[in-house]
Every structure is written in C-alpha cells, then in structure tokens.
Length: 526
Image 1 (cartoon, rainbow, N blue to C red):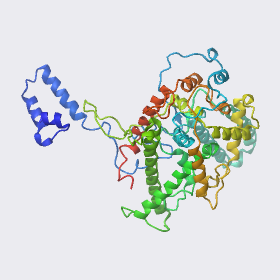
Image 2 (tube, rainbow, N blue to C red):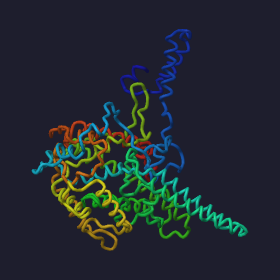
Image 3 (cartoon, rainbow, N blue to C red):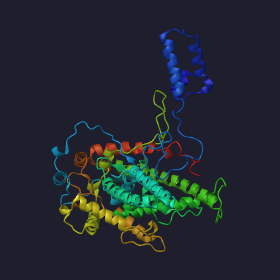
Image 4 (spheres, rainbow, N blue to C red):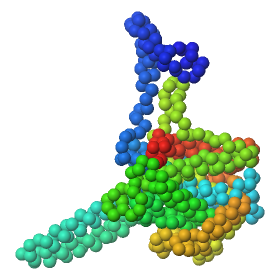
C-alpha cells in the first residue's frame, strides 16, 4: 500500500494503508521515542486532512461580494476592506529623516523626467495593454488621508446633537428665562464646535487610507460603498445596471481607452444578468414585472450579486490569460500557457496551501504600480491638455501640490451628474448608451499606439505632481532601476524588482480572494 502511494502519487483507501499503519503503531512499544514521533506524525497527517479554519461556510450571509469588500475573508472580515490602512511588505531598515533626503523636485528632474525623444516599448506593447492595467490598478488603490472612522464619529456626534436639541425644544415652557441664557451658551458652544471641526478636517498625511478594497472586485465599475453601488443599479428585479455606467469618477480623468474598456465590463454585467434570468436554472426567479417590493428586491440582489461574481471571474481570467501572457511575452510565441493560482494543493508535509484567507495591498505596491514611464506619446499629449484645462497653465514646474489638489477638488465638485450621464472625453451618449462605433474607434486607436519603454528619465513632465512625495526614494528606485531586455519570459520589460513583484502580487490577489478560489464554484455562479 505504501509502495503504491509513493509510485502513483495518491492513496488507494482499498489498500488499507492507514489501517495497517495504526495497527503497527498500536503494537509498537508505547514508552519509546519512536512511538511518540510516529504518533505525532499520524496526528499531524489527520489534522492537515482538513483546512483550519474551514475554507467556507454554508448559507447566504457570505454568498456575495459586499460593496466595501468586507467579509471576503470570513474569519477576518475587515481584512482588505475599503477604508482601511495599507499594509507594509518591506521592513524599513535604513530610515532617513526628510531633511536628509534630496527634494522630490530634484529627484524627478534628475532621474525621472522624460527625455525629448520617446522610447517605444521594446516588446511592442500598446497603450491598450496599459488601459487594462489602469483597471487592475484602480481596482486596488485609491489613497486618501481622511479616516472614514472620523467621518462616522462626526455623523454620530451630529445625530446626538440633533437629538439633544430636539429634546430641549420639547421641554416645559416654565423655564423660559433659563433657556434664554442657555441658548447664548449653546450658541457659543456651537461656534467652538465648528472651529474645532474645521481644525479636525486637516488631513493626516502620515496615515494613508485605501478607499477601495484589496481585492479584484472591479470596484471602478461597481464602486466601494453602498451609495456608489446603488448609484448604478436599476433595481427592477433583473439585477442589471444602467447601460454603459460605472461608479468610479476617477476613470473620467484617464485617456478614453480606459473608460471605454470599463464600459465593456459594464455591458458584460448586463449580458450575464440577462442570461442568468433567462436560463433561471433553479427556477427560483420570476420573469417580467414583480409587484411585491420585497420579492423584487431579493431577486434583484441575487441576480446582481451572481452577475458580479461571474463578471469578476471574467476579469480575473483576463488577467491570468491575455494580460499575464503579455507580461511574460508569451503572446509573441502564440503560447497559451498561464499560471494557475486557483489550484488546490498540499505541501510535502501534507499541509494544505492556503486559499481565500484574505489580502491587504501594501504601500510599496502603491508606489510600484505607477507605470508613468510607459505612457505613450499620444496619451502624454492627452494628459497635457487635460492638465492645462485643470490648472490653467502648461508651465508644469510652476504648479504646486496645493494648486493641483485644489484643482482636483474643484473638478470633483463640478462633476455632480449621475453616472448614467457621464461622457467619455468628447464622446457623448445617445439614448443613454455610447455608440458601438465610438467605443470600437477608441479601443482600436489604443491598440495601434505604442506604449513607451520602462526606463529612467522616461516619465512625462506633466506627471511631475501626480504622486505625493512621501516614499519618494522607493518610487524613484523602482522607476529608475535597469529594465529587463525583451526575451522569452519577459514581455512587459520593467525593472527587475518590479517584474518579480508584479507576479507575486498577482498570485496573492487571486489566491487570497475567497470568491475566486474556495467559493468559485458552479453553484455560486448560477
């Protein structure tokens, strides 16, 4: 039985290997060191037969993705959810005070600023590839310095304050003289509270917060809060979203190929939802108008949640299919091989290699995923025109961080329209949808345009203020490192550190996501 297990790579229970082993152990002298070691190995073997803690749970509570990503890790529900701090991947062993570092402006001009002559990507990658990369990156990173817990605290404080004033207004009118002096005091206190609130609004730049989850949940399409998710949903019982909509306004500030590609995933969601309802495999959904609001809401939530799971599965398969093949340069050979981070396997010790245990993206990867040197010439011109409209000048050196932040804030405040009304650059909607030919033209142009090479002195001048100067030394090091040469296994051709880190992060993102591993089953996707 033991020979067959070693040769065939598996245990045939009908050979009674376990039973023979336990019988041997029961007859071995119990007071020996060998007996203790053998028993420990048997206990370890039986312990590792199962996952600890269990990989999934029964029921509808954790069936679908939540808006903020909470509950993706069942046993650590807050792990990687939107509104939490970044992780740290690398220990800071040689910290330097800011006054000992060169200025970010000097580093940019000396090491990053693009030279006049463009350097086309050595492997011929197009700007379309990086439009898709934008979706991956913006699914995982959105930095703010405002802690959402502070906002919750302020809201609850405001609510309790309203409650107090409501109680006092319903008090007896016998104390009118006292209430007069009390009102003066309240007014004075109110002014103090307002001043204090203004002071509290100042962001804490020492504590970056990630506004999106650490999972590949297509948050640029669906959003990262209930408010954002609800803004794109029809809620008519079909699980569909408004045609050609997406929830993340940041996408509007990118070259048209990125929002156009995101519209494809938006359409894919509705296609999936329509197919789910049409097939209705378990016969639990109603077709046509549903009068009962509760039943309509329940059905819409189920179809929407299922369609989102399937759409995120498409997103993941694209990442580990065409996207990874381009990174490794396999497309040049017509090679369809890909890594399979979803597989369930064991270590030599019989221990199950974890899946679906959660993920938190790190601050180092936030710096790493700024692919600014790869911006193509066409997209560089687009960015320059967009920046000029935003800040009113093309003198990039004269723009301060404060000016840039103020312009971004003003732009965000001016864009208050509903997502179903958002344009893509100069392309407008017709009857709520974009023209197919417009989307095709945008994506075709992006495919025809070459990206630029990863290299030192390759970042467009217009991107000078895109990053906050914290961690600038790491950012510069990653961007200025020697790039890989084009060869089999190297298609993206970034720096050596960046290349290895991208692959490691891709595996962590997918393998740590319960919805793409343990719960990625036919039952959950239908």
